[in-house]
Image (tube, rainbow, N blue to C red):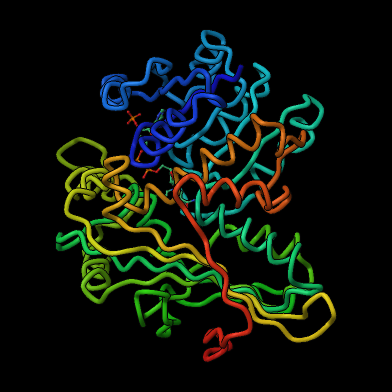
Length: 403
Ligand code: NDP
């Protein structure tokens, strides 16, 4: 008998709750909690499963999470609130003996800075408590790390070049909208780019490096080099990697809006005084932008996310390998009422939780996804709505730019 608490009932939380409810043999009891209980109630009602209850919690406050855990005594918490809450939830896990899974690494509110050090610092405490923490179990980070682990296990003796490629070729019909939490999304893409080369991190200007890449079933899309958190753990866990980069597609219309938002100061994350009230411009912007959860209805097209890897195969011969998933916005909406970006994050989070609860990913300590066996996860992921494909020894395109 397993009980999970899902903290967060936004786009990703909606998908996680749907998918857990579809697998009652693993998730016997499901609790959905966020600051706004009415939102959790509406989600529970929309799913309509008898094993879901809801609760209220402000996950910025350890004592509230501890009280929540004490009321429900879950085996695992699936944290799909915001990255700001990672550490408070991990603290409460240690206090109450609850296992942990999230989809985004901790970020302090006042600096847009991504690194695992804050959460890796909990390793020994989780290990001593006999608790497992699974970090970054969405799509990217998440499936991107599992794809890499799968490539290492089955194909490569040495992976040398890793490019994670993330394309959203969908169209939601709005002039400008972000596909997940606008505050977190804009913080991520307006910072400097960064990639790993020959043992060092190289910094680029924001969205400075780009090139067209062809995505399966989609075609060519301009792809921009960004820093992404999974690069940090992957280059440590696979020391043969000489270069690791992350690419994401953006349309010109999106980039023009983004530039204006930055130029007029609306991407600022410091507090300003507005008529005697302190506001953070980016948080205000979030309040007026379309809610990513409501983009699904008119969203058409597909996402395509994967890993393009080259190096030496098990016999030491050169090998190129591309593993990816394409996900349709329409199909995601039909199943869960959300678009594919929430879907591709929520399905892996549920799958990781399933791996833990069925004993396949149990390892006391704090771990990134590539530290677990990729095989049962990828087998389940395909069954749960995200099938994946492999292309072997075809050109990867990514060497067109070698910074
Ligand atoms: P949303 O903004 O749609 O939802 C966030 C949810 O968290 C809301 O339900 C909100 O509800 C809740 N929340 C926020 N603050 C608190 C708090 N202090 N206490 C309790 N609940 C809180 O975000 P998304 O669903 O789009 O994203 C969720 C997470 O998924 C983010 O961390 C994001 O970075 C991550 N993500 C990861 C991806 C990946 O591939 N790895 C891709 C996309 C997203 P309320 O206001 O009622 O509290």
